[in-house]
Length: 109
Image (cartoon, rainbow, N blue to C red; front, side, top):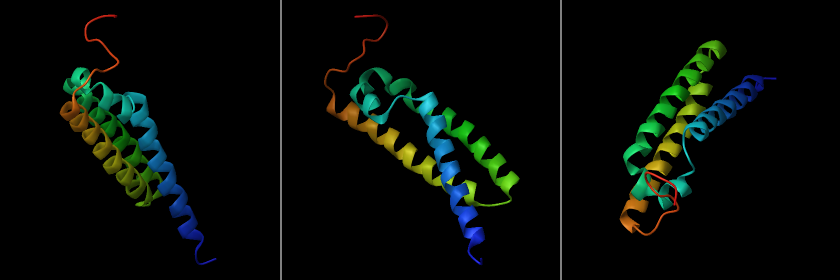
């Protein structure tokens, strides 16, 4: 039973990684859609990524305090770094490639 605490740590890590992914999903489109429409979305994209990460950080911090564990911070932090990198890459790649997007700014088709 010496590893019982590691099981709890692993569960907390996974739960709080998922919390960060869920919050970012609720505040942003997918990186794929972002890349396709970077010419229209680049101005507001990172604002919403940062707002989502700020919300996620609050939940992760509360989880770490409640669990008295660093696992939520480790899981949430890993997810936050990966998601930030994905959206930053999507933005940069979409702007560099150009091309037609699937959205029209300021109206409907």
